[in-house]
Image (cartoon, rainbow over all chains, first blue to last red):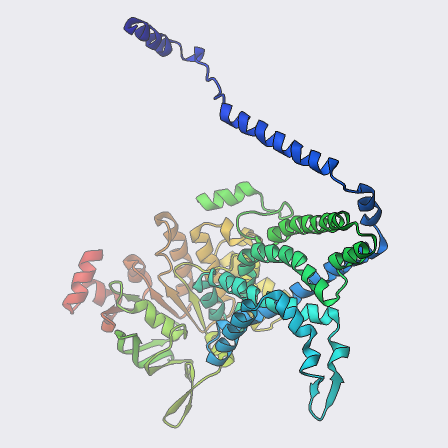
Length: 302
Length: 253
């Protein structure tokens, strides 16, 4: 036995090229894969055998009211995120101000609107007329609250304002991630603090801010479904209206699911491009700039 | 000749730590002053006080006959609003140890940000001036590069150009070569020597004794938050009177 070992050692040493690396067999992985595939097939079979009228799905997928609902979902996502981002940036800048009043207001805003559930906030805004029958500036003008507080406005305020509370924290984290020297350098060339924040610090912070905001935008697409509770006709509401009539509940919910997936997928792709835009100057660059990479590398070394 | 920057009775605390103790200082137009001394002696803090990056606790700093950061009414000093402080800062250019170029802007955009964005001067004129400045720091071909593509030495030369673009009355250098690889120090010092030769008023906090010897009209030695000794390069480097200066010089030379 020992002489055989010696022989093997010798042959290995003398002829390196004859050595062959045999790939690992990974039996466990293959068994796992087989089990998963079987389970998935069973699941697919269940759906196939289940009492799902797929014709209802295809019929309603592009029906006018569902498409209108999809449109309203997109509009609400967009508008609520705009409100949220504007409020978030303002709240984040206020939070970092030297003025204790502004700081406290910002902290209070985040505390209140991040604390209360989104659905509850929607209901509060929608029912505002119960406590304030009219709104306006005393003596100047006043209007009936029910005329203003439409489902759209209530949903926009409810979703946008609570989104702002989350975005404020994201923006603040982004601003904190930027080296203090950037602010000082900007100030040393005569910028005021506000200008330096907006022109120098925030654009750089965007690199850190965009991924979580993209995440939250995708979250917002789904959060808009809450607005169905206050009569805003987004996609969930539209399919509900249809299944109240024809009772094909699951089929219509599948329709809504498909649309949510489509919108979220498109947004995810969009996010990649936006992130690319804001990472300008951080090593990665697009081909439109004239300087060849080799020269940059030479500069780095020299 | 007039003093461009003057400090009198300047005191500065970080919490209870007394960083600057009763600093009196003057720099004339066209003069080059190097500030040397051990780390923690308050050299950088003093520069930052001149540019109002640090608030001062007592005394005053004057730049171009204006009290920095305050409006004087009799014997009372009222803090100036942010906008006025920003205006005053334009009179002095600052070069930082770690460059602090704006990484999301190209070299050219970094340089014209001040003159175009802050001073509201015509863009074309500023771009032309920026190209002259780039020529002067030897980086005319890098106008469209991003800072991350440049070496430390190149970034620092761009930072100098960015400060010069504001046409400041004086330039402050806060250890401009301390963050550089040794082989890159020369190119930055070269630019600074050229600036000094062209009559720029400069205060340089540095550990480059050779540079001080060659360029400084006066050397200020700081230790423990105080100015210990001031004199020409010959006086301070060859023949220091104070034993602390003597120890420091013999340690670094």
